[in-house]
Amino acid sequence: MALSKIMGLDIGSSMVKLVEIDRSKKGFSLDYVGLAPLPDGAIVDKSIKKPDLVGQAISALHKNSKSRTKHVGTSLAGKAVIIKQVTMTSMSDSQLEKQIQMEAEPYIPFDIKDVNLDFFIMGDRPEKEGAMEVVLVAAKKDYMVEYVDLITSLNLVPVVIDVDPFALEVMYEFCYPNVQEEIVALVNVGAGTINVNILKSGASQYTRDLPLGGDSITREIMRFFDVDFERAENIKRGSQLENVNPRNLRKIFQRSVDYFVSELQKILDFFSTNVSYDPIQKIFLSGGAAATYGLASTMEAELNIPVEITDPFRSLRIDEKVFDMDYLNSVGPTMAVAVGLALRDERDKQV
Image: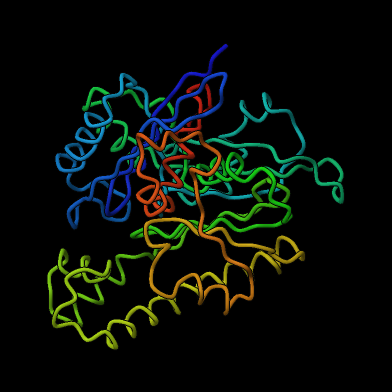
């Protein structure tokens, strides 16, 4: 039975990304990649503030794809999403399904009636008889409704609602099946959020979102050079550099990068102290801000961990007559979450 195809729709703070992957007996092949910038303020703290503008961007991408597929998978992140790994009394999936509201309530800092809950059982805890490790995911209902209502208003069907760190995990499992390192950190640096998902032997052990990202660099450029958001974005990306002192610009980048890395260091230290004493052996860096000047090199030097820029297209069949490989290489890190979503199947559970 063929898998039901969905399009991966990643609605970020600064741009919308859309990916379609075809599935056949020959393997998985890339059908479409597209991204569209969003104006400043369209998405704030992952909440949709200007649905008309966001909807126009999504519609334009879908029209450009010429796809007949109406089913999409999208994902959530930020402060309205809680992911916790907790210890519970051992029980089956079906038992926990029935008791999830009651079992999860002590761990969720929202009214349990206001969230949608999902979970997956990681396995028993051998050192504690009758106990198991469970990952709980809670997303505020009103926050989800914004995304679902927007997508359905565009005559599209949201069949999978994921969370960014787990979409990254799906991408990683597909694209890097032969990685030898036992413990890796998937770090996705977006415009407003840094997603961290630490995997051990391919299974998620710890996730965390940081309210940081490339937009903070843009805001600093706006303040320092007294320019508007659009000009600051162009300066950040290396264009419109006239009348800009490169030394001052490098200082802005380095201050922001140092702060990103120091906050990431806190997460990795917490993981090493409280979750696993085994060291993290590699970082896979993705996101629209992954190519930020000095980020990968500073991360590698300060954390003393090898860093690799993620290529989410590496295991897909790609027709080089259709796709510009230089373009795919340049946008690849930005598309990591969208690729993970496109690899989902509509039979997957929603949050």
